Image (cartoon, rainbow over all chains, first blue to last red; front, side, top):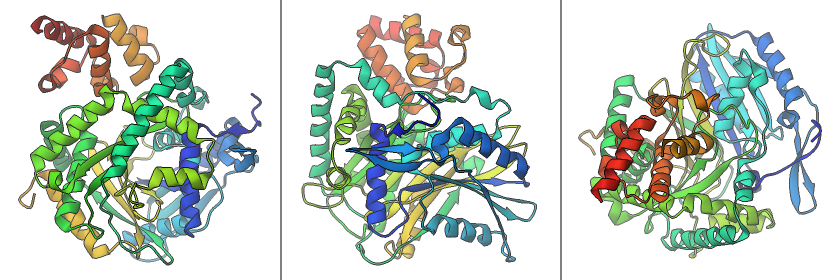
Length: 429
Length: 80
C-alpha cells in the first residue's frame, strides 16, 4: 500500500465512529479522548514538533480526514502538519488553571483526528494528546506518546488490523457460531434494565473532569484487596465491582433493575510497539442486578465467575464477527443496536476503560520526569459519565469525565467518596 | 507443553523482541502478562491439555514462569 493511500476503517474503528456520530448528533464535539501527562519541567518543544512532523511523514493517517466511500468510511491523508499548540497559564492558581485550559481545549468543536498541546504552568506543565477515537485506542495513544519520545522511532511500524487478522484465521462456520453466541450474550445483557447516573437528557452540555490520584501505599493496598477478592486475573473487575457498589449506595438517579458496564479487551500484545493506529478492541460486559450489588464479597465472586465464563465460552472473541457485520449497517442503525435495551433504555450504566500500568521510567518523557496523568473522554448522553483507570509508576489514578449539567456534581462527589471507601475497604464500605 | 505455552503467550499475549531468548524461569508477569492475559492463558491451557486449573490456585507462584506453569498444569492433571 502506498503511504498516501486511503485506509478503510477496520470493524472496531467503525464501532467507535458510530459512537462518535451519536455524540456529535447531541451537539457535543464527538468521540474525542484525552491523555494528559503532567511533566516536572518543560520538554524540548522544538524536538517534540520535529517528532510530530516525523509522525505525519511516517503515518499519514495521523492528520487524515474521514471520508465516505460507498457504504464504508476511510481515513484519507491530508499531509497537514500537526502543530504543537502552546498554551500558558495566566492566573495564580497553578492547580486549577491547567485543568481549566485542558477542559477548554477538550470542549471546543473539533474536526482534527489528533491535536497535541503543551500547557505551561511554572517550570513544568501538562502535555495533552487529544484524539478522535476512530483513529486509535488508548493503548495506541500510549504507543504514540512513546513514538514522540523514542530514541529509535524506526521500530514503530504500521501493521494490519488485528481484528481482521484474527477473523482471517477462522472458518466461516466458526465466525457464524461466534456471531450467534455474541447475539445471545447481547440479548441477556439487554434484558436487565440498566441504572443510569442521570435523568437529564436535554440541553447544552460541557465536559468536566474529576481526578482521584491514590498514594503509593493506597495503591498497594488496593492491589492486595483486588487480588484477594477477584484474584490475579481480575483487577479490572475489582474497580468495576467497587464502582457498582458505590453507585448503589449513593442511589442511582435513574434507578432500574441492575448495572451493565461495557469494557474493552485489547487484542494488542502487551508492550508491543505495533500497530500504532487503528482500534484493536473487542467488548465485554460486567453485569449485576441491584440485589447482587448489595453484598460486597458475593458481588466480586459473581463478576469473576461471569468473566471466567465469558472467556471460557470465547465470548471475548465473539464480538469480533458481530463488529465485522456491523460495518454494513448505517451509523444510526448500528448505534441503536449497540445502545438500546429491549425496553428502549440505554444499555451502559457508564463508560469504562482500564488503561493499565504505565511508566516512563528513568528516562521520562523527552528526558523530563512524568509526575502525574489523567484521562478524558466524551461519551453519549445517557450515560454522561465515564470512568478511566490507569496506574502511573504503581500509583492508581481514576479519572471521572462527566457531562455538566446532566450529572449532578454533588451526587458524583458522593459516589467518588464511596468508591474510595470501597476500593480501600475502609469503614464506609 | 512449554513450547505450546510459549508459542501462545508470545503470539497472543505479550510482545517480546526475541521470544526464543526468553528463559523458562524468566518472569512472565514482569514481561507484561496482565490479568486478562492470565485468564486467556488459563483457558488455553485447559483446552489444550485437557485439565481443569482450580480458581483457588491462580496465584503468582503458578503463573510467573513457563516452568511454574508446566509444573502447575501437570500437578492439576495428576490430581484429576
